[in-house]
Length: 247
Ligand code: 1GP
Image (cartoon, rainbow, N blue to C red):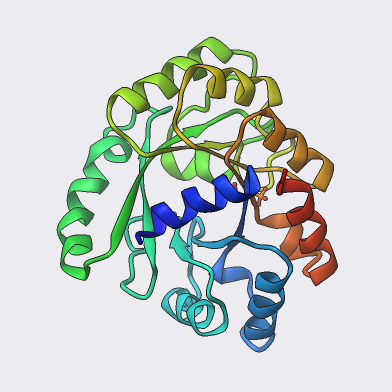
């Protein structure tokens, strides 16, 4: 079974899945193996690994530690084209469709595709949409693109439909790591009503209640990063997992 199929199965089983984002620059290597085991036991369905810079050299090591301490998929969520590794189960092959920067639409993909092919790494083609989260985030700055305004729901829906018609497999609605406001619930609801792609929602989600609200609105997967970097206790992870798992 592919990792994509495994993720769809999680969605089928729980109504919505919990993806925990690991930024290799922010982990404590000593504590990390225990943390991965606790997170898996506490209801995390898969790990996303990536960051806007990754200066620490730990990228591949982090993937290997996840693989040796958990049976949950380790999926690369690349902050740039250097974040590719055969140690992962799959890679979100991102197309930054909300922007109009050709490098993010096709340039980086062309450069990385032959390398990914040689590695035999599974790709999950993903329409990545940046939504204004109330402040300039690393994703916006590093990608040199403008996010979709929060109140332009029709524009967001049109992007989602285009992603579906282009044959992409999933949509990532991103307010940006550490966003002041997460992706508007109303926007998730409308996109889920018009577009059948699984929706991954992340950026600025800080409470289990907020996560549940996004899941109920129609997100297939919820991502948290910052909040668990700040409060990495198993109990907090479990609260998020329980809130996100609608069934
Ligand atoms: C960023 O969606 C993720 O790509 C997670 O964001 O760090 O704000 O949880 P946070």
